[in-house]
Image 1: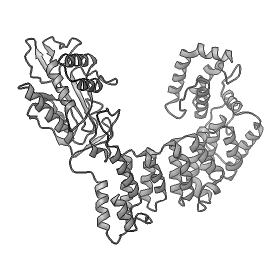
Image 2: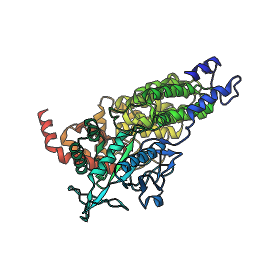
Image 3: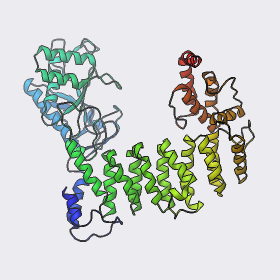
Image 4: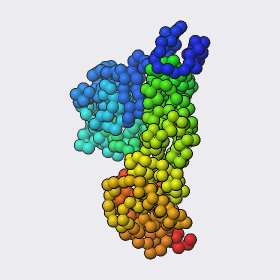
Length: 559
């Protein structure tokens, strides 16, 4: 690539990142190339998905043109803005229909706001790549009707008032014009099933070429998550090749007659990855932000490398990017940059990133930070005060997946060395979540802990010693029974499910969390004990048990 070659010649491709320092030599040349990569191009740009994106430098659809006109209510709604590609497609489609059917006028509905974003009348239409087109209609005498709004048609193609009929001939021509366009590719035409069938029957009756019929069958769909679209066409186009390079995202399949800009996209990712090593911090940060816009999950290694950047703004940008893009398989790769961080804030930020993922791999790494800090953290973070923020982020993560072994590791190796009250409280809370017991209050009494001191260390040490030979499930049972939940038989059986469902609604968070963990194992569900409310979780398992009670008990009996 020219940019990479130029940076290499200048000796800048591997230059040590150090803020926005002045760079001698041909700085203007590489900056100009970098700006062409990072800046949005002239003209409209559709960004993001159609149901969650935005629109840059939108084009205003004219109120009327050759063969088309906006519906009367659209100008006041201000939903008349689109990409260059969409405006061109509408104009060419209208022109083709007008040439074949004199005085035919496409009636255009919602497109997008000037800057995109949510519109009240649709879930999509947020990125300038969706347009609503009213159906052509005829009256009882077969004459075209000039519409002021959409008309809803039943299965016979009649309007609700019986005065109008679906104009199959001209609507078929609209679909053919949209799918024949040589510049813009249509991804979907949303229309109700019964009207789709009418159009396909008409196409075969008129001996439309087989390839066009196949395209119609593929593109015309009744959406499964919205209105049936029995009053208008909803047309969606693919991102333009240029927009793909700046963060436009296509959802769904590429039809076999459409060629995605895969190679150009890969080339752009390669250029951006090189720019994460640029000599100016502002360009490194912008390159990271652009990788996020392009949803570049394959660039995770470059983002992890940016965690060692000397500039805090670049580091924060890398953290934000990894929250969005990092696959769980790359979590172990964070161990090395975590060990190299020399400031408490940066180490804590990486640990919080792991905590947001909440996977077992992340929990293993967090446990290592807690039990062997000398091996997993920088020597410059050698005091409890400097490690505190990292530990506070690591403890809830360990508690989420930890069982007996992790609890014993905290009691033996971590708890005795904590002198700060906030760390003692966090460790105490983590142990409650892992053991289902609260040694700081009387068993069976609902009492919040208001004050904690070093005496908590002795109590947890005594608990671990007393129950060292018990299994983790026995620990959980002791905790449940201390809160008044009795099990007639083994806790790990279907007979205990009703009791555990009641425990899932308990007010103590560690009790309802562990009840959900056991219920997941017994029922095969995967409900996150930290998501939703305890009331929702308990209701979910009650519904499950009502549906599967007989089958669950018969399986347990066979065991």
